[in-house]
Length: 306
Image (tube, rainbow, N blue to C red; front, side, top):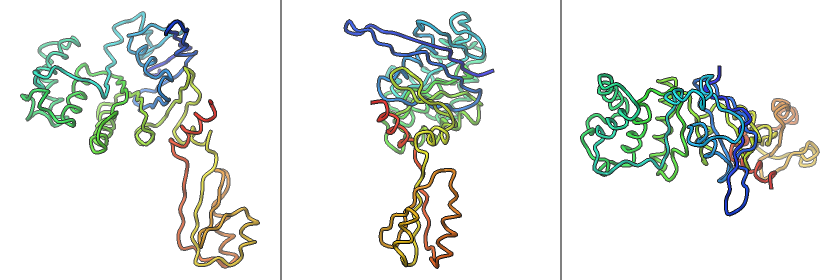
């Protein structure tokens, strides 16, 4: 059983008299315990899909199942989900403990359990010693850890992260990514993550889906989707000296100084190229392999959609 199953979901909006198809027969399966990345440009349908999973919006057709249950027929299943956004804010006058108490009660956590759970989360995120401080006095990093603690109050099986590092300084963004990985590892939480930062998704996610104009265009492991659009990689081989330009060019190599550039498909054997060079008296000084990144995939996918 998947943690989240999205089956042929479509959603339309009216905008300035125009009919906008925000989601077009979207289907996805997200496995228990995985960190899954949802990629796409602005207006692709990512936030609309998250809002449908959260029950904020109703789909025009299709259905969403969480832990095997239709979320619009079994509303109690929503207790298994929580949401984290980089734009989450709280009232400036409330302390960390006030905020967690308020949301804990809102989530229906029993009073006799709530205090212990709050203390556990304060310790887990390293903010127990500052629990008395007001939200307005917290640093960006402290606010982020509070947001994470708040999201875990109801012990969700699924967390939705919508652009969690948007607008953050690089050092804080690194910490946020570390916390996402730690929550997944320590709690076994299923995480669905949207992000514009390809390096972030590549670092965190085992599988990804690419959505554009309301349609899922690709889904699979990070390596698989990269190879779908970028089936080759570049090898840069530095040798002691170039002996025979014509021989190398006949093999399809490019030469710059003492560096030989080769473009290979993933089915080709790099060892055969190195053996060829050794047989012809070349001494290899350095070897670099440049594989396509998720950003390369993202750019190429958008170019093909134009």
